[in-house]
Image 1: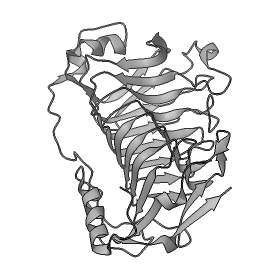
Image 2: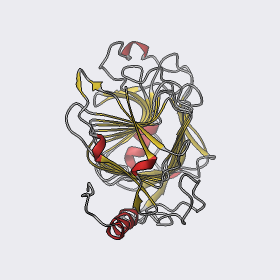
Image 3: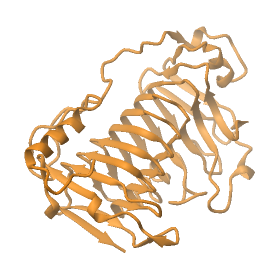
Image 4: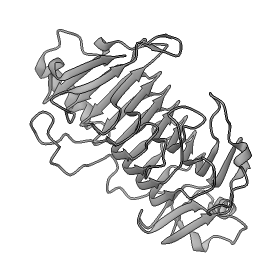
Length: 359
């Protein structure tokens, strides 16, 4: 997807339009470079009905935990009513510890709206402080909610962090194919670093294929590490998402992932990088990204290969979009090439608006 030097502007404009059209992502109206987009954000799947049969949570057989109750869904989507679903403690399963799990028998979880349906671990109910790793590169395996197997639909609820006396993650999507997640809010998930084990995630998209996220808010509320994490996943689209107020980590953190498309996504007031890419491969497209109040707006590092980045109609800061490339990373030379990063405004290449910083 890297543009050859001889590609004409008309062909480039067609290429950009095609990129925007994939998955139903429409371009914004023409605006001055760096201006905020004046359009209603439309994302893939907006307005589509959930095809899988639904079942009200209240109709499920009573059980000793949320996890056991939703396991009786028999492949259907669970319709969560309004209210607060509180889980007691984190339970060990499949190498992780989770407040609740929506496993292979659950077709999905649909709430009554992010302001009406909340999932959380009951405050100070955890007995797993001793299970938090203390040394790099070990990662924190505790999450409020883990979704695995066939759970392909998530919509309309909040995952909320509560005080436990230790760090943990928010929503973990574990090896799911074809996830459709929309209108979710993740808040107050505690972390204290930009690297493991203190780096936790509001959202952790882990080893998924074909995930589509839309209309997402991840708000660290001043206690978060990294807001939206994507780890070893392929072919992911994130549309109309904001990750903010994570004072020690990233807004969006991509690790060892490929086929990434970000549309109308915003990283605001995060302690390290707004958009952070490490060991990314293949093509990465950012359409109308915005980054403000972060130490680095966009940062790329790899010890293996150089990915192809295309940044389309970004919101500029001081007249430019800045990409930071550390000179060394993981003990070796950063393999990411500046020549593999292009900036497009209104369908035309604008290298004059792209600022590369090395440190």
